[in-house]
Length: 581
Figure 1 (cartoon, rainbow, N blue to C red):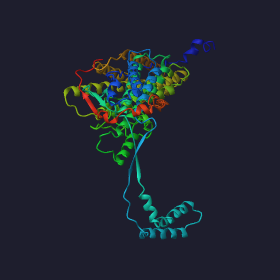
Figure 2: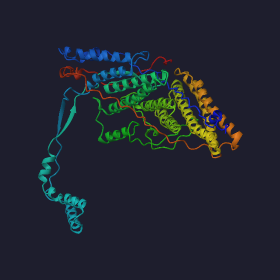
Figure 3: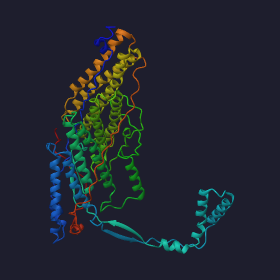
Figure 4: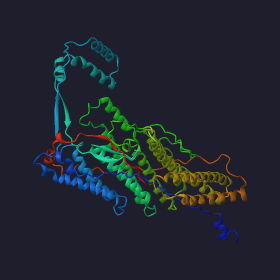
């Protein structure tokens, strides 16, 4: 009796294992930098101002130049004192000024009247319509009186002869002129130049479109915020702020995708003809296939990288679907980093890193169940192994064929850099998911002396150790591939600490099995992956409160559109050397 009441023996039957060590290792995306040369709007738009109207636009042009300069000042990655809210405020101020180029302050419209030729008049109903009316009358006599849907269709059909009996009214309606409305715009007045992040030759892209300019600003803002989260140390105190910032990044990239698609569908002055209505319908369908749309349903692509981590069989989640591979066209308005799936890839990356912050906070709370942590890790496996990997493959599949050695080498290094990071994260979170399933089983085996739980725990922890070993090898490949591209903090030591935690639990399971149960690991192997669980969504970018009040009607009328430069889209030239991180 004294032996059973000993505190030492009481604590021996209750054993708790440490929560997993979450290694952030966020992907650095700040090389090359999405940059653009400064623009003096007074010098660019000054020649197009009507004589005597310079004072009407002087304040507007000065505000445009100043807002763009202050925005790039805030986008500098060395401006560590600029908060996320300050940066987004400067983005909104500049965007309000840009949106004034799209349409006049009072939506001034020019109406073009087009009269279509009238068809030949008809005075009698056709034989087909008469037969149809007789058939409908016969069905009406035989059908029950309480069938309301049929009665409504009968009434509609019976009215056809009456309409056909008045051809004069139809002719009068068809002869009425159709008014086509055309809205005046200045969106192509300024030519903007930006670095194309996906051009392996390092060329800039010129686009005479304020929509492309705003989309490029949002892409640069997302790059800055992603780089800031990758550089800052993720702690328990900063996890909440990092979580919110990364969700904002996903919303910013969604708006960038919308603006880029909108710019592709706008008719530029000087084009041969407007898009055919069927082409516009096809463009509308293509937009729905984007990841940012809720109706994306393209098939999943397998990553041909050498990864052994299984992915959960849950194809119903939105983030598990990769979009169809976009294509490049010589008539595109936006640069390749906006036309291809880079915004989608960065958005999925931002949500996956936001999930990492959530996972770190969950592991720090002792009341969080093991099953929830395992479900979050399983969601990470799906995000990195399916969503992010699919977008990374789409970046290179849609690119044009390599033309020289430098272009081939650029694709080779960039592809290895991205794939090795995705592979490392997929294997790492697979190991954590297995550990979070095996640790509670081992606690149950110790507390209840359960041989089945110990056998299952041993199988789960053996699988976790294998995934950790593979993740360590992928980490070495990631660091090696990152050297010619960007500086990264080597996560090898942090992964080693996480592997040591799993090894201690596995050794305890082996000791328990060897001393008591003698069953070894479960012959059936580890169980299926836990059901993924996540409520993370992108935070939509707050809508801008209209255009700037500096866009008055006098300022709009001060520009002579006949003196504006011809819109141009395309590469502006090749750089002399590559950007070295």
